[in-house]
Every structure is written in structure tokens, then in C-alpha cells.
Amino acid sequence: MARLRKVLKHPARRKPTMLPDPKGEALTTDDMANRPSAIALSYANKNRAPRVVAKGYGAVADTIIQHARANGLYVHESPQLVKLLMQVSLDDEIPPQLYLAVAQVLAWLYEIETANCE
Image (cartoon, rainbow, N blue to C red):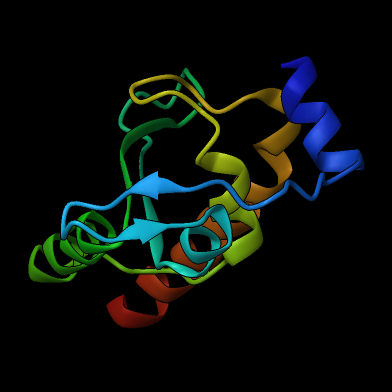
């Protein structure tokens, strides 16, 4: 949690690092920062905080978004929030520092769903 607070207050700029790419090319961390990313949250248990149930970059992110849309789920674009949520481990609840931001997304979703019901 301390690391998450640090990111919220002081985003660090790292030197580019070379990373392997499945296509056999080398990627830098700057290239990775520009790749699409996606997070899927589940709020099935209303007595607990939402959980990260899927996350990924590049083709994985595209697949997450495609599956969401194919299953009638709404997709919300929020690059800053996604960047923070990418630090949460898969299947973990979101940290308290992100409750307000995620609550705003859930409120947006509620508005859309109630408007579609009318």
C-alpha cells in the first residue's frame, strides 16, 4: 500500500529498460507505457471492495475489452485509474485509496443502467 501511495503523490519517471517481446522485438518501458491496457473489476460481493478479476496490456487488454463488450458489459475509459489499478494484484480487492475513484465509475455505470431501463 505504501508503494501505491507513493505513486499517487510522486509519479516516478524511469529510464527506458529493454524487455523481450513475444514477436522477438525489444520493447522499452516507454513503449510499454503507450500500449493499451485494461482492467476488469468485479463487485459481486456488495459487502466487500471491488476485486481486480482481469488485467493486461496489448493483445490481452484488447481481449478483455472484446469479452466485456461481447457480454454486454460497459467499458469506461480512464487511463489514470487503469494505471493505478494495474498495480493491484489479480484477484485482490482494490485498496482504500482508490475507493472514491472506483465509486465514481460505479456511479457512472448506475446512471447508464437506470437510463437504459427507462
